[in-house]
Image (cartoon, rainbow, N blue to C red; front, side):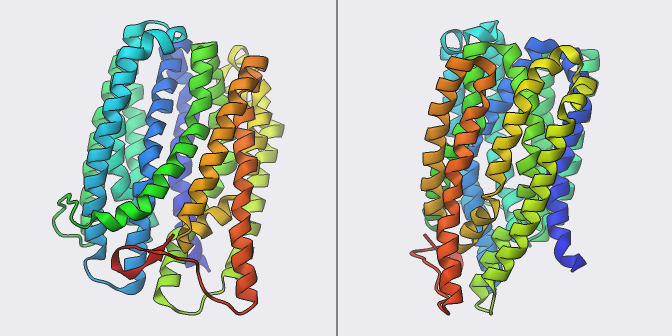
Length: 441
């Protein structure tokens, strides 16, 4: 039992370490940078999250291919998947980085005029573009480790590198409290993290020489294309409201909203980290053909998810305002506390769909996930725009709430599959091949 809990525990530690470090260091960064410059850092963070457009596809396809190869014991499967995913990440990440650079360079004076100095906005855009490209390649190695269910190794590398990033940023800002100094530091640490992950992944998975290649990329692309569509919806959820707030209300409002989101998202994110082990586990078990009770697995994981997410939500609603006053001071805590409960509620609803989300990924039902998420994202953007226009900052959480409610549709195919299992039918709806003989739709 203890061994089974190690992977979720490592995944949760990996997730919690960075937000915890940010939680501790945010008052320092806010003091050194000031509200406006800190808002630019949050703009960079929101922009880098647009990389989720590619990460969700390439990463999911890599996890699926590596886990399926592990289940079927096909030699060379992991190496082919990693090399193909690297080629896709280098090309796709480069194109996305170029788009982001052009948008900031030519559109900053118009679209983000409320963010202040156009040159500072352009600097933010350049740093974000480079980080997006690095993150695409970084994601391939993280996904390969998780596909092989090496969650402990993935977590240790990530925790160490993120701690180094925060520490380096804090030291640099002590001596040079400017955004360019911060951005250069973030870029240097990101490159070092990428190199470390490449070495660790190559050694642990016995990959041989890492050589990006499109030769085996067609099967990865079959899975990834639906993940990219899902990524569009995910970006609408994770970044669109922040971009709207930044452009419509300015840097200070974006700072308050980002801090509240940083707290509220833990309601969903901690459970998401722990439950992420479901994806490769279900994929591997379905691939090796041995008896596997999906119904029992679903009941256990759903109960654990409900307990954990509800506990976090209750704690944040009850203790959040007092903590914010202690954490960032009464001046910033006032507007932040007003939107915190609404964001917590939205993330709690979203957490309910975590188990069906990971189950469907393991079953290969990424097409249904993608269509659901893109519909949810469109609804989120529309709701956020009208709510922010009418209510100001307090309307920001509306988009995330709409997204969360729409995502509850993920329960439908899982319920149908569980009904088939109880009826003695063990088929999984599949259509397209993945590398090594696995299948997905």
